[in-house]
Each structure stands twice: as structure tokens, then as C-alpha cells.
Length: 335
Image (cartoon, rainbow, N blue to C red; front, side, top):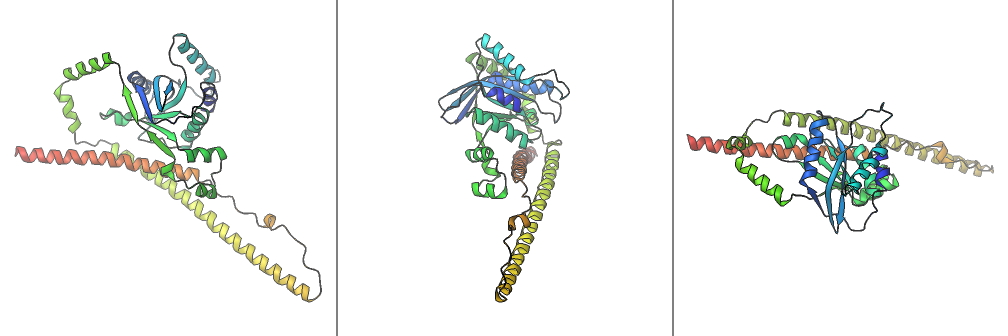
């Protein structure tokens, strides 16, 4: 994704107004869904570029185009050249061609990762109003469109600029997993003709299709979400173990350093009482090199992903509980 951001930097210049709302054309949403249906398979992630413009505090996304799937062995494919050709073609037909962000599909809400953080930082550093759209095809297949927009918070942007992911740096910045990403509200806009068509299609839809929303079957969605949650909990446990090991080694080294200084001080006092010169000065920092502190950014990302899984499970179970209570009421009424 790094090469994609370099070309994005020349697409527009950052503005001072923050983005408080995102307006997406319905055609853009359909293109994202179609892209995943054609190239996405299971947990495979599809990505693309968002195009549009900024109007005051509103980001309008009017078009998009996907990144084609290719392997690392495909040396003939040039991502930057592909972007430039696409933007040149859109400019020739008088279509908005300014970069305003990118989109990505997700697998059971597994999108909080270091790759997404680095990509969004590169976009947002070059274009201040850039956003990332996360499309969840599994939730969408259950009957409700799941499309969310995220941006990095100003605190996280400063940390990424300084590249200080040490425990002391994150503690000084007072940042937690809940302060890493900020969600921006989305409004989907359609033309009047499309709204008329949607109303016409809604009237022609059968009643049987609407009853499928009351299906009590949970399929394997809950089981898969819990399995992914347990996997991330194992990763969190390993990171905590590494950090605890670092703290123990650091504390042990500090004790050894204090003991050495005390012995040196006592020996100098004895030498002074005997009229001998004190011991030569030594570089303590070279003798007691502090252990390498583990980077804590990955731990924050894991915590953010765990929180995302918990929110998804909470939403899913609350909907199922509502269906169960409704089914129980209907059964009691019929009996």
C-alpha cells in the first residue's frame, strides 16, 4: 500500500476543515459490493481507491475504482502506473478524480491491524480528510448493509509521526485502544430517479422474503466470531507475557546496578581512608544496557480488535434474543 499513498499525495492538498460527515453515492456502494463478489473469496481482502471532493466539513465520495488482484511474482504490474492511468481516464470523461481515501473489505470484523494503521496514516498524512471505508460482506449478506468509515485520531497521528511506540511514549501520550480510531457518520445519497426505482422494487418484493428476517438460526456467525475472539485473546496473552518478562528483567537489572554502585561507593570510602586515590570513573550505561522494550502498538491493535469482536457479538446476540422473545410471544398468542 505504500506505493499507492505516494501517488495519492499528488492527488490533492490537505485542507484545514475537519471531516464531520461522509456522503456516499449509492453507485459507489454498489461498486464496492460488486468488487468483493467478483474477487473476494472467504477471508481474502479486496481494496480500492475512493474519489470525490470536500465541501466544507462534508466529504463527498462520488466514485471509486478497485485494485486488481495480483501476486508478488507479477513484476509486470505497476500499481502507481495503474492509478495514474485510471485517474487520467476519469479526468477525460469529466468525473471526479481526486483521492479522498480508500476502502477495504473485512472478514468477520477483522480489520484492526498494523497494515491498516500504516496505510491510513500514509493516506491521512498526505491528504488530511482521507478516510477508510470498511465493508463487511458477512453482515451485509444477513440483510443489513455494514459500511463504516474510520479515521485516525489526532493523538495517534502524532505518535505515528514520531514513531515512538515504546511503553513510555504511549503512556506519555495517554492513548488507549479506544482513542485510536474515530468513526465518521455516513449518509448514502441517491438521485431522485434511483429513489423512485427503489420504491417501485420495494412494492414488488414478496412478503415471504421479509419474513426471513425473523429466522432464529444463528448459522456459524456466532461460533466463528467467538473463535476469532479466542485467537486474539491468545495473542494478547502472549504480548502481556513478553511485557511482564521485560518488566522483570528491567527490575532485576536496576537492582544489580544499585548493588554495583553501593559496592563501588563502599570501596571508594575504604580507599579514601587508606589515603589511596578513588577508582576511575566508568560508564555505567555501557555496563548495564537496559533491555529492549517491546513495542506496545501491536498490543493496542489487538485490544482494539478484541473490542471490535465483542461489539459484533453483542449486536448479534441482542438481535437473536429479540427474535427469541418475539417468537415466544407469537407462540403464546397462537396457543
